[in-house]
Image (cartoon, rainbow, N blue to C red; front, side, top):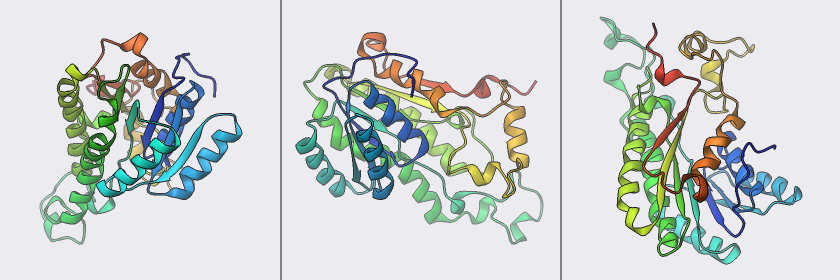
Length: 282
């Protein structure tokens, strides 16, 4: 991958949760290309081991670890193994997250009589589904931060990057739990930035707009590859008129991780969304 910025991360150890996914795998490769040793964490061990193997064959330094971001004991065990393999953490990217069909309404709007139909309305959203989505996104950021940020105390040039979303600015229809959880991530990013400001740890977030991933592909495209009505609405509301390419996140990622470029930047949430969050619809 050709990097848009050249930053020096030699000697740094980066931990990335959710690294089995498209975007966080790309984050891992970009950081490794800048010289960091990268620990790829995901509940899907096979995926991160595959990605780490590909990176090592390319001359980079990486290793995959099975980790459930909602299991603090497991995170502590992985933390100890990473310290043995690479050393203490300098960079933490909290990328684990996602939505669930159980926390998604069938329709965008409530209409009279919907409560009596065989659909998922606001009134019969599954409690466990909503809790899962909120836990995965919010607690799945809080717990890894508790485990890995302790390594950063007393060190220079350490940073935490959270993954928020453009729907933290304006909630999307159908996915109330995910929208609320990502809004919580943006708020939590600011809280952490203030809390760790005296310790020299910078905390920021990146808020991707619409990128096609394995997680949302079925919402965006039909089985025959044609766009769904939701895709048409998204693109009509995105001034640039297209989905983002994952490599278009790399510049913002590396800028926020660079002590030289962003040493006085903390507590910000930067949208990378083709203008979606700026567009009012008229």
